Image (cartoon, rainbow, N blue to C red; front, side):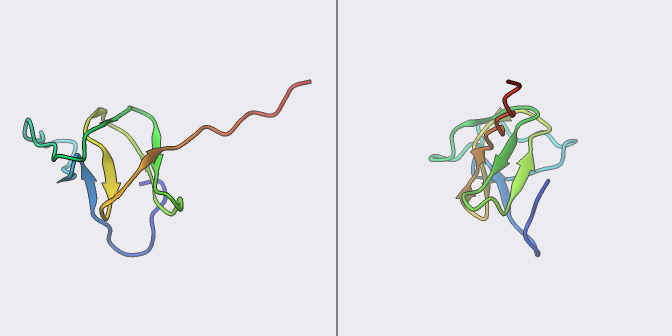
Amino acid sequence: MIRAPGGDVAVTIGGVPVVGLDVEAPAGSIQPGAEGSTLLGKRYVNGDQTVELLCSKPGEGALAVDGQPLELKEAKPLPSSD
């Protein structure tokens, strides 16, 4: 996590609780309504941007925190060089 609220949160990918990098997630474990994918090196945030995650392993399944879906964080525009 890059940014997190105080206290514990439940992080899910594809509706399934997150497992460690050394544990292989079971195949076909994406829950209905949690389809999507995560991209390596991209940041994901919730609606009010109190939670921010950095994807360290790409794959299938949408990210969510405490049942709230996360969205791909948009890059900040660079200032004009003119």
